[in-house]
Image (cartoon, rainbow, N blue to C red; front, top):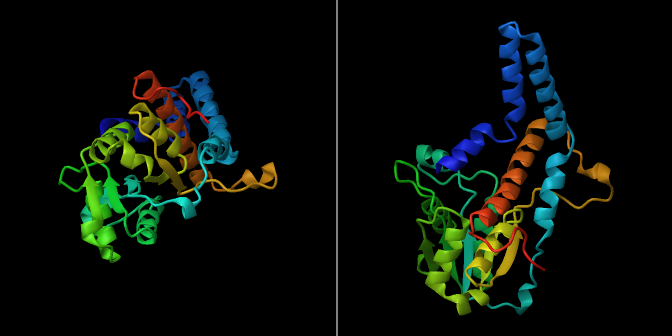
Length: 261
């Protein structure tokens, strides 16, 4: 796992209330009550904002609503591209068998669509590698083979460290004309960034969103969920994506912050 993911996991917004409260507790322990109370109060206030209120839901919803599922009846894709991201690599390495975290739908949907379109090749695209050599694409491959999918229809694109490298490698291997008729599968909240990366290499592709974290609303009350830890995780994941959209644009990896209509 690259350093930026580790840094975000350590000091990302989901952990910020904890760090603020810890600083406050240390200040109180060293007899700095005014500083301690300020930090502790800020930590508690931020916890309410991020863990009690549906902040994560409302940050995630526009990301997931950007693309809808296509009409499959008019498609005949030559390639079905699945981006890695749902694999629990440390657990997979320790147990010696595939383990997934919150996004197995990426691969499962890819396999299901590849069976629906028997002429399509299934492309597994990733690049995260543990020190022991365990790769995200290895976990995906073992899973696909384990459910009986044909090895001869699977293609591997590895050694890509981020979403835009995924797009560049897929474009280089398949070509723009093939991609134009192909399908891209990733989590719904990740699709805006992924599509911007394909746009940056002048390639178009049909997006298929999966792994939704939000749900349809009949009223704003429906967005509330009394699960503080889940809400913190939702905020962390959504903000990671929003920051990623901005970071990719600032560093020149994409042409815009948000996909055009």
